[in-house]
Amino acid sequence: MSELKPAADWTTGTEAIGYQSCCACQSIQYFRRSFCAACGSPDLDDKQASGEGTVYATSLVLRAGTPEAREHVPYNILLIDTAEGFRMMAHGANDLVIGDRVKAVYRQFTGRLVPFFEKTPQ
Amino acid sequence: MSYITGVGLLPYGKHEGSSTIDLMSRAAELALADAGLKRGDIDGFLCGYSTTMPHIMLATVFAEHFGITPSYAHAIQVGGATGMAMAMLAHQLVEGGVAKHVLVVGGENRLTGQSRDASIQALAQVGHPIYEVPLGPTIPAYYGLVANRYMHEYGVTQEDLAEFAVLMRKRALTHPGAQFHEPITVADVMASKTIATPLKLLDCCPVSDGGAAFVVSYEPTSSTKIRVRGAAQAHTHQHITAAPALSELGAEIAIARAKKATGIEISDVRYAAVYDSFTITLAMLLEDLGLAGRGEAAARVRAGHFSQHGAMPLNTHGGLLSYGHCGVGGAMAHLVETHLQMTGRAENRQVRDASVALLHGDGGVLSSHVSMFLERVS
Image (tube, rainbow over all chains, first blue to last red; front, side, top):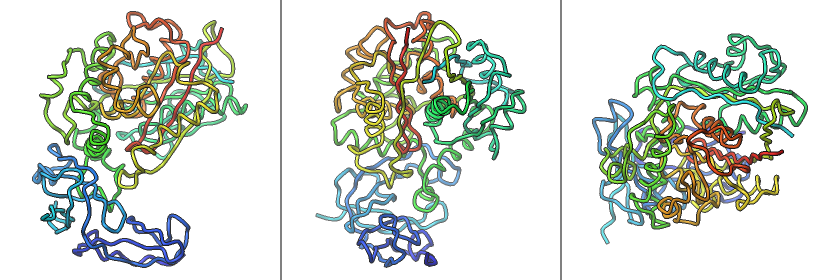
């Protein structure tokens, strides 16, 4: 199994959304691994998503679990179906609804960089 | 073949000063007495986990403390599905001849043994540590996402979801061991504080102290014979980000496998015990299991279908939503209540006919599912 390079995206503080594409079976995956979860191949390409997508689901959090997160309430937890075809969790504008076309910017949340989706002007 | 020969259930709520092991011991004692068995009869032991007492060998810690030396013992963890998964494993151990009497125990001082923040944080760890947890979601937010999508796809409203909280509270009012004893209305649910949209405080189960236990045996130990007909599981994902479409979730897969394994159809079922961590969980699972049509579960609640004397009595102890949720013991209470119903011992909660029961547990964010059928035999 090949060694996994560190991600270069929001999970490590870079303004980007990374994903992997399998050279063997063309599957894509968002959760970074040293192998393709669909076929097991270690031959994966690192890619960067466009940041465009559609809102799949939203939940506006009013009761946070930690004192650090409590300073940010209310914050909107989203599931986004990206233009590239994978689903991801992110933050976004409080008034987003299912089906909205969105694009990612980045914000600070509890001292970390997180993707924040805003509605794309129609 | 295996039989559930004894059950034990503590009141849920606050058990100030009681540890995980204390609560497990009390529940185990009740189940042993109910089965008419002694410690020395127990040759198999299964337990779950405790967030207030993390341990790499909880089963043997308990066995030593309680005074049993089983030939088979370990803990298992499948989140909220743990109770049903243990019941399934106990059934298979008995069927496989590994053990004659398997004691199954869950208990935790989840309410008084830690701060509310610690409890919420411990549970939020079912999320992905890199791709979800840094975004500050909570368990209600994971289920809030599911609820938001389910309502969108099937035209379910917040008032619909509130019906399930009201139903479970009505049931809890008839059980002295339940955590909550004040009646609530749909308006009360709607007016309760928002936790993570669309879920409000009364859409969410509470955090409780409590414990539950049962014994699964190779032969009945009394004249009432409650037989495990069979069970099945499905595990489609761990994290909500990786969940399949709503129409492809594990409950439908698990129930299809359980029906195939037992030959039992939903039309044979007379009593239902369904996991209800949130109102949306119960609404979805009822529909996934085929106990209501898509988007129709709330209408069935309003029509009295799931009431004590309705066509399909459901969680007559009040469920996780109103009896309480102490972790592993939470869903085990569903099984204990089912046993009481099937053996005609549910007192003022007794239903007309509980001869065939369907039980379903869910762990994670609709991640792990266990469906089980029980049958009273003469």
